[in-house]
Length: 320
Figure (spheres, rainbow, N blue to C red):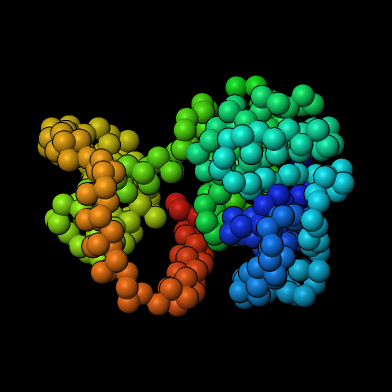
């Protein structure tokens, strides 16, 4: 049960692992985190400092971060963990060995959640002999401490108890978990992003729109609505709202949309060297003047403001 989880082991200290650490620490949990990369511990300390204002919203910063421990070898400490969040490289053979080690040394029934962004867990549990039923995907979005979404993806053998434990735990730390009923490569949100990105790459590389205007087409248009009501409810609203709004929109715009899709498929971005060169040339022009540190700082600030605004609504506040 989520209320029994007090210590989380985090394996992998990249941006995702560090974001998880900030989230768990801000909720008063103990964190044991490990990464073999040189400079990983210093990078983690720097990330904590960058996240100071966020963590101060949940308590005394120094007290919160005093509840973590960086270790070079996680194996001897796995017995202390009530929940394990794995963030290793997205390489199948590596992940198979890592998950097998975690399964072998973790206490019985402790959930092992992988942050894999596209590999279903059924592809890397083959070597697990202790309890593969407690292994599943818990895929966050970057940065994990700010973006509420986490995709919970069990493999066919994952136990319902492990799924329920993961769902309850993520909710208890302020996440908005969604449950996938079947495994699919890339899961849900990354597949949606891939579809949008492929069309974006096509439009840019064909010279139809600049990369800068492409971003504006999303951030000043449908992206604003999607952040509030998602594509399905937005579709329903476009059909007049109500339970019948979605069907009305499909009936009215369906033929036109199908013709657009035919053109989209015809001009699908093919990842050829020529198209890649055209894409990179346009993107480089648009991104050359970006002040990245400022962009990240302001993005995170606006994200928090947006989430606060959503929480104060009756129709959009649940689960965020």
